[in-house]
View 1 (cartoon, one colour):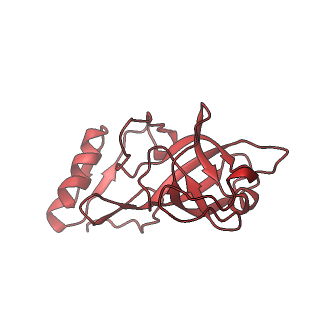
View 2 (view 1 turned 135 degrees about the vertical axis):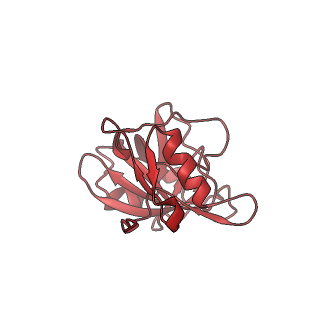
View 3 (view 1 turned 30 degrees about the vertical axis):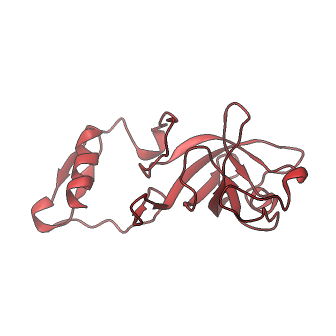
Length: 168
């Protein structure tokens, strides 16, 4: 885990310190902050844990109670979402960049299939972050919190709030 954190820090042009003490402090270049990085959507599952910027919409009424990719029925009152790249079972924080409102969702389905969108939200989640039927689509930041990995373990993502620890 320590090596992975150090490698991620240095691969992004930053420096890692405090590695000998078991605490990694990553300093990114001044021109790059996590909020400014917009990673390209890949074809395979996204296991990086990095935040993404894009547009989100909400499920149409015709999808209510239909079976989703994970086998559950779509609950319009639940906090579920569809993503093309995040693994099923991922927990993520979705923030509407226009209103600043956030919600925690579980990725349970595949989609959206409309060009330029990275997430479909249940109506309850969309309302919570300020997306109404009249608005329809909004710019969002999707920050994974916990990502299930193929080997059965989980990985923490950018949406997990961690205290800043510095080696002394």
